[in-house]
Image 1 (cartoon, helix red, strand yellow):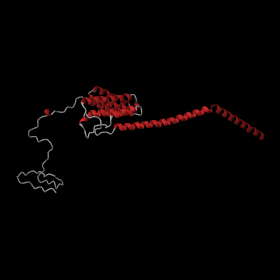
Image 2 (cartoon, one colour):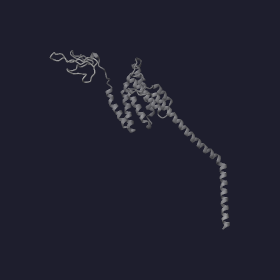
Image 3 (tube, rainbow, N blue to C red):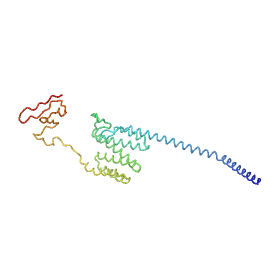
Image 4 (spheres, rainbow, N blue to C red):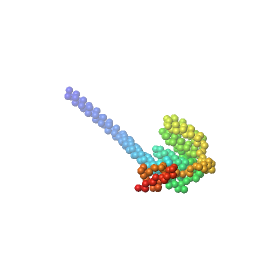
Length: 284
């Protein structure tokens, strides 16, 4: 029994030794190639991680530059940023998220807003200077620039369902610019395309907004004109003078008792019997 057990152990040892020899032979033959492959995989993974961090940093920097270029929102709803700075940001960061499209949309909205209010982009509405006013030719040029920029963004996003919101914004903006330019057929075509696209993309609110604008187009074709002074009917001879009127206080009314301070002596209505009006107490 001991001899049999010893033979089994010797056989197992020989088998293990042969396996070790085969493994050593395999390592000698393929070990360098396997190690090279492992190092390549590890290197690619590390490079991928570093590239992701670099790309995220570039996107963050692009959004920071975009936010600085667009500026704050003015009191009339028009951005106070520079359209030139926004367009430069759009060129420098093309392909990084949607920074380029967003910057182009904002530049177009600034041109459109400036044309509508008749003042150059970035005008301080609290301190408007004569040089801030736009000529009719400049207004037309800005409207055309806005339409061109809106069309550019619409062309870039039309076939991308994931950026349907950008396409709708651009097309609605272009329609507004063409309305201001007097091309109602082009505006109608653009609004109809927004309705169709919004319904396919399941954006009911956008589709409803486009339909509303379509319905309002006929009323916009008739320009609103202000009446000239010569066309107004003459005022009646007994008409009260225009401007701010100060009503007389009724008889017996004492503003000081009512807690109303006056810096001028109040005027009272003279009684019908011709008697003197009651004296007004002096101002405290």
